Amino acid sequence: MSANACPFRIDIPAARLERITSQLADMRWPSAPADDTGWRYGTELVFLQSLVAHWCKQYDWRAAEATLNRTPQFIARIDGLDIHFLHLRAGGPTDGPVRPPLLLTHGWPGSFHEYHRVMQPLLERGFDLVMPSLPGFAFSAAPPRPMGLRAVATLWHKLMTGVLGYARYGVQGGDMGSAVATWLAHDHPQQVVGLHLNLFTMAAADQAAPQGADEQAWAQQMQQVQQREMAYAALHATRPQTVALALADNPIGTAAWMVEKFQRWSDPDAGLLQPEQHDELITAIMLYLVTDAMPTALWMYRGAAEEGSGQLPAGARVQVPTAIARFPKEFLPHPPRSRVERSFVNIQRWTEFEAGGHFPTLEVPQAWVDDVAGFFLGV
Image 1 (cartoon, rainbow, N blue to C red):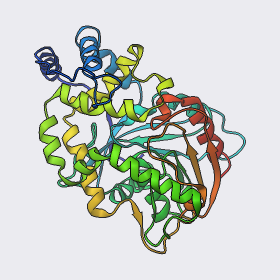
Image 2: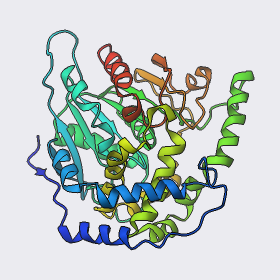
Image 3: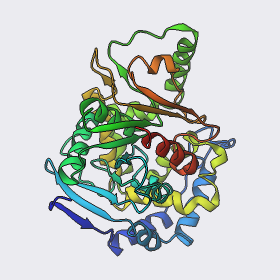
Image 4: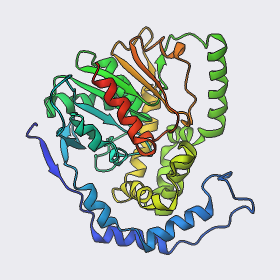
């Protein structure tokens, strides 16, 4: 590891925690519609009240902090930004197929904490793991202005090769991380040995209009989802500071903005919002609150829009061996394979799962691990 990577431990000042607790306790709850059930209007008031009650009376940030600190963490300065990342060396078998180091890259409203259920199983299978925090998320410094996802890919490549010294590596991504991972594969095909995606949104600029009945049906579904579910993304991508200022230093507002996505985007059978999962959900929220990261995390949407992060250049095709993992409760409709293959020309694995949604590392971690490990052991 390069000398410019320094060990890092989370140690949030007590005053910051006390302020959050005070703000939670001082909340003046608004009214809700009489039929505010089934999350039909967005975040359900009764659910949020129960979550906050648990937060105030039972949740222990210091215990969560101690658990987070058991994983080796570092800060490296890359292109003027202090980038936070987890780096774990494999403790599993070294015989058999070569196991490339894996870069796992998250999105919003996620963080490095999304991977805590899959780290140990991958380590036991012999993979080194690197999990960076996106710029402006958690403990990574924010850029001076919104940054696009292709620019993030450049940072991640420098992290893997310049800071950590890996000559070749595999990449995995979901949510915005799927675009970051795709750009890594597109821009650095000599170093990226394989690309695994559990969300597919990108295509080349010259890709033809939907072809055939399957693709046309998918396009209609996408249009419906854009109208029903994507208002948040349009706001993030156009006026992020409006939301940022509303949520800054606002624990309950931040919680409301995040938990609705965990509810809408996950497989209900995974139970991410059940009472026994409240500590985990609160830790996910706290990683935005204790770092004041929610405002700067939202900038990424504007940066992606300005950069055109969601579209490959005309004529571009991803040549790197690719795996597509399709989870049935993913809120964004999966395009048919015929459409994916027009931009990703080396698909070697295509897996249809029986359960799981937008957060598979939390919802169905074993199935996700089996698919990721199975793919990268074969590239």
